[in-house]
Amino acid sequence: MSSSLRSWQNSCITRALEHFTVTPHFFCQATPGAGKTRMAAELASRLLEQDRIDLVLCFAPSCQVVEGFRSTFAAVLGRRLDGQIGAVGAAYTYQAMEYRDEGFWQLLDDYRVLVVFDEIHHCA
Image 1 (cartoon, rainbow, N blue to C red):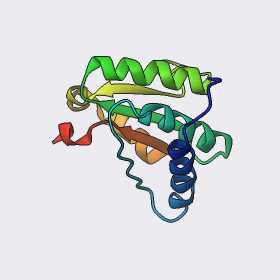
Image 2: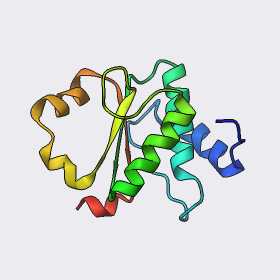
Image 3: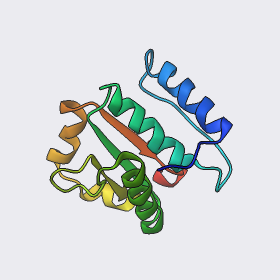
Image 4: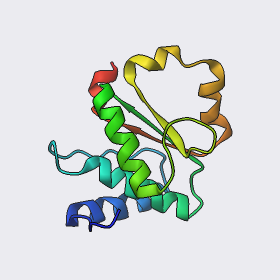
């Protein structure tokens, strides 16, 4: 993706990269339309370039947001996010989480996975 990031996105990525050296969790909050998905995709790109993650999983409250994750991450990473062979990861709705089998969840133990939750309050 060729457009430049907003100042807050660059700052957030820098803070996240530093934060991940001491803890595995990072929270980003911004207004709707601010560019959180793009920021997360750029963060994933840098983590992949630095060989700090192997895969990306994204979870969201709706199919529309899942499709946004897939297209944005694919554009930024240059790799699919459709869960198929050769993809860098996958995106699912929160409702689909209960239908993931044990093999899926084992990925979190077997690989270094960046997991992105959009509107996490919907996951309760």
